[in-house]
Structure formats: C-alpha cells, structure tokens
Amino acid sequence: MRTFPKVLVFYLLLVTAAFAQDDGIWSKRIEDDARREPFTLTARKPNYVLVTDMEQPNQAPFEFAGPDFKLHNEELKYQLSLQTKMADDLFGGNGDLWFGYTQVSWWQKLNSAVSSPFRETNYEPELYFSWLTSYDLAGFRLRAVNVGFVHQSNGREDPLSRSWNRVFADFQVVRGDFALTFKPWVRIKESAAEDDNPDIRNYLGTYELRVLYNWRGHVFSFMGRNLLDGEGRYNAELSWSFPIKNRLRGLVQWYKGYGESLIDYNFNMNRIGVGVLLTDWL
Image (cartoon, rainbow, N blue to C red; front, side):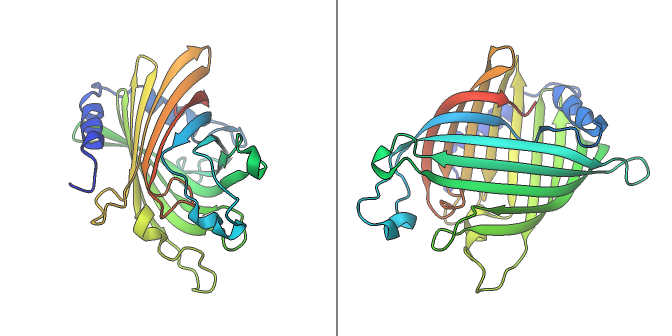
C-alpha cells in the first residue's frame, strides 16, 4: 500500500461507507440518458473552468524551445465534454450507440513572457454501445455496461506529439447517492515508428476507477488509475462540487500523480484548482 497515499485510501473508504440503501439519483441519470432521443446533445463528463496552481510544471518537453521558455506554476484548466446518441434500441429493445467527445486544455494565460500559450490540449472522441442492466451485486446494482473505442491525442507534432487508441468496457454500479464506475481497457498496439509514447501503459495502467457520492447537492468524486503499481506511478484526482446559484456550481479539484495530460503522462503532477462548473456528473 506504500504506493497509494493513505489520505486517498481514507477518502475512498469514507465515501464508500456513506451510500444510501436504494437506487437513487445516479440510477435516474443513467435511465434518463437511455431514454433520450437520438442526436440530443448532452454532457458526457463535467464541463468546467479552473484557476490552478501546480507544485512544479513539466518543463522537459519544451526544452527544444530554448532557455527563455519558462512555464508558470499558475494556469487555467478547462474541460468541454459532450455526447449524443447515434442509434436507439439496437439489440432487441436494449443497446444504444453513442458518440462522445471530451477536450481538456491547460492554458498559460498569465505567462505573457512567452505569449500566453496553450501548454497542452487533449482531444478524446469515443464511440461506444451502452446497455441498461439490473443485476444485483451484494446490495449494489449494476445499472449499465458500455463497450467501445476511444482515441486520445494532443494534436501536436514531434517532439510534443502524444496519442493512443483503446478498446474499453465501463461497468456502472449504483446504490442511492453512491455510484462507482470501473473502466478497464486494452491499448491497440501501434508500430514502433508511429508510437509517440510506447511506455504510456506503465503510467496510465489498464483501468480507471471512479467513486461518486452526492450529499445534499454536494458531489464528491474520486478517480484512480494504476493505483497498485509497484513503482508508485498512480493517477489520482479528488474533487468537490457545490451549488452556487441555479445551475452554476463551484468546483475544487486536486490532482496528484502521473497522467493528468498526455504531455505529462510520465510526470508526477501535484495540482490544486478552484473554479466554476457548468455541468456536473448529474
């Protein structure tokens, strides 16, 4: 357990212990998505803007730009994430085809000395099938299973180019105000000549675990990847979102570990961010 900070273990156990007894808000969200008409645009993941501060920026990928190119610790981070159903009830009244798109950018807005560049932007289109289920698992309910293909890249040229392709499954378990998703994947191999990051699996692992808990409109989230890696190359994110006014929400997000972005996939990041959330997981 030495590779996984005790504070994250405590947080995970605390949230897991706090769930209610019946299907609730998370099950409703999954069911609402399944009932949507094709080509209705909705949020895939949270949409937000954060002002962030990192302990140390990853300067190494930009050494080619010369000694005067210095990154700031402060930058803006924002995420845009959308999805739409492409086809409905494909397998005997169940099974929908979805397209999703997520874009995350890290912007050195205050770094006027180097023309305030976008340090990194990751593009993530995905195509997947989704089935509603109702299997009971020791008091929990497996409410949906997704299977699909995802591409992620940063759209840059060498030496900054990063990308990978995966096939994945996504198991969504709910109980009351508690939700858990387990998303294992397999990387699609590329030729050595085209692979920008052949060791990315060592840092981002083979799965993503996410725990969500809704308490009186406050949503607490934990995300973990590669948690049991023997060399401590875990990826972990804690977040807390809370109501401000109407649909506008506040967001506090802490990221610790590798893989926050593709350019930082092999860099150990420690970052805190505060901002506003336009759409949440709900």
